[in-house]
Amino acid sequence: MILHRLMLIADQQGSAGQPLPDVIVRAANGVGGRLVVQFRERDLRDADLIAIIRAVQRRMPPLTTLIVNDRPDVATALEIGLHLPASSDSPAGRYPLFGRSVHNEQEALRALDAGVDYAVVGTIFETASHPGRPGAGLAHLANLRDTLCNIPCYAIGGIDAERAPRAVDAGAWGVAVRTAILSADDPAEAAYLLHSSLPA
Image (tube, rainbow, N blue to C red; front, side):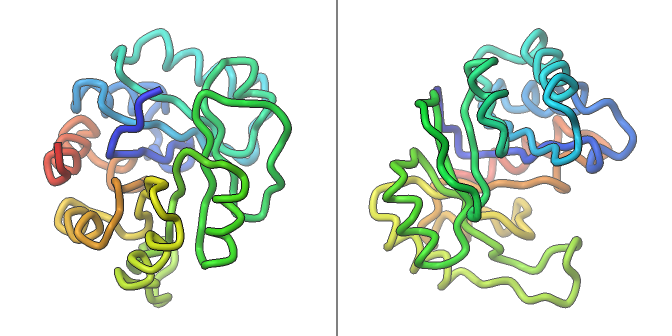
């Protein structure tokens, strides 16, 4: 599976009333398929989540990479990647792509021990979902990037097209966003602008 530089964190609550598969496919088309989509649905039953992912699979561009958050059975059933929150134990089995969320050095070392293919590092900048809570900052990102050695890491938290290059300059492989694409009037354009701000 291809580890593109732009990752979309996708859930129905964030899609502004639009059908989630439609938003995802539009975003993926906006970047020619060069998008990692992480499905993060905490409340859906596995069967309902599988139905959403399959709806995306039927329509997405060939290059798009799909992963699912904290649902190893779903990842296995659909043969897609698995992403784990920092607090989750690593399941048995192998996945086409395997990653973890990381917020501190201890979690970064745990991710390395688990043999991840990538890590999502946050929260870098203040976000609308946590107003008043300062982000950890770019120096924090750079420090965890050093701990993660050669493991690609995505910066998450308050990322937009202006901040994305700064995160890459601090050592991130790419960026992960939710609201910047899911809530956009035009998800394709929003994804394109973010993707264009990143290295080729």
